[in-house]
Image (cartoon, rainbow, N blue to C red; front, side):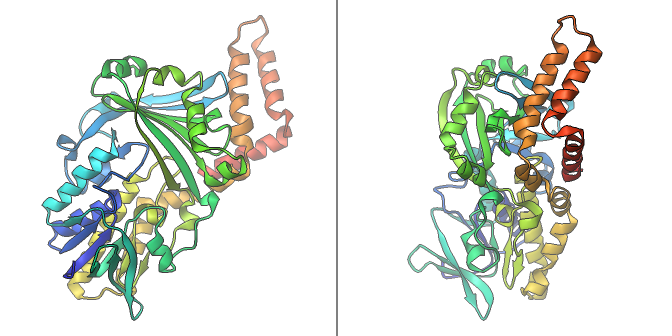
Length: 431
């Protein structure tokens, strides 16, 4: 631990391992520090891994990575208490190489990914907590760990330590996240026979389904529930902003039980044997809360940088891409021997020029809009269900009368002008 490295990466999640792999592959001396017993033991996400960004790091990784199922169908359920309006896309081309995305179990996948970084030459140290960055003359020159004589030095330190990045906070890169800037997600892995999963989700052995649920899944609060199919298990979970949980005095396990027992969801999870129960904070602030990304000798990546597109539930792909860009930035700095903030700032520029910055900017007002206007999930989703019930119930009423009745109900609470404003506001937030 006393030797000096070109690069120290804190956190062996998707961002950190992508950074370590890329840098080590290109000849840099890399130390990857993980606080868990092994990479993936403390990492949590819903379970969807996107192909494009990882393939740029490890071509055709799916041929050896411990993936669960390629996703061939994405479903969206808008739930009321005893009904749902659904939409989906199923594409069999997603079930063929090079695929679109996969379901994964992080305990398996993260360990495999970190092992690939080790194969490239990175040194992985597990069960080690980085307590602070070592700063000399305003420059980060290493990290201090909880190990005896645990100071270790490097030209650059990359912080990939997740949404609760205490290290970035210690450096003054951001303040304490507000409750409306993070979401608390709880998830359970339920074991089910592959045949049962195939029958319930109408897929074959090497086909997966992702389901995103809105409305009653979160009691009408801003957030989503989800169902993802693995080989012989399913991930079921739900998340909402921490501010909503505090305001409505919700307990995470109660919210998950509500989802599992919802009459539209219960048939899919029935008989599942609990394998894991997980909880995790997810950055939700997006573009408006991205912290300072670069300092003298330090770069922030992944969840620690608020790189999550909450609207499309994308996080792992942004993490991997940001980790790769961070490594490439350090490699360029190594060529000149300049590890100052000015030199490393090309990372920030490239992030904002990439899909990460552009997508975060596109949806910069979405989370705030939907949280400040609870009618979208509390009122309009149930109305949508009631409208479908009214229109498709055959009771001898002419369809034009049904349409008038539906529109009257939709505008009763807020009026036609208020309804139109709500629709415009929502369109503007996601356009």
